[in-house]
Image 1 (cartoon, helix red, strand yellow):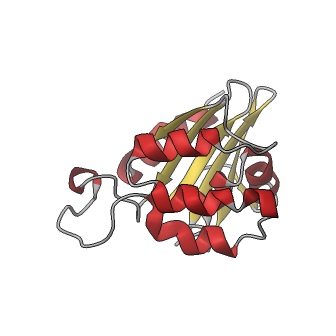
Image 2: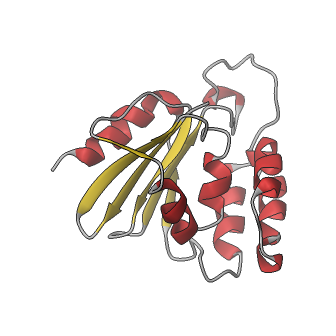
Image 3: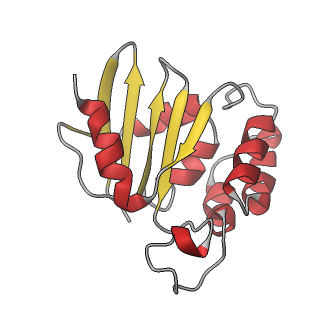
Length: 158
């Protein structure tokens, strides 16, 4: 699973790609915008976005975040294949969150992943976590995977 990441900072937008980052993208995102920035800016930088199964946009200028992950289903209607089995919500990403090198105060992120069965519950819990590097004052949006490239690719326009 590959990951695609967009960073906007000081009016400049960059796109990064990680061939094996798809499964970790949501966990990296959850750890906080500063951590996510540090991780993805070490990945391969692209001039044009590739197809990917997961990723995010972090706009540090407007404090807006957009997340997508093909494996996460918030409802049967959200799934690319509504008949596909699997849990709803972010719970399937708990192992990736647990694999991060979490500091003791960041262990609450594992609980956020376990409780995030709806988009609203996930965002509320993520913004409520008392960490220095958090999304407390960010707007966070979900974009389905099939719409992600069109939606996020437009961020590369000057």
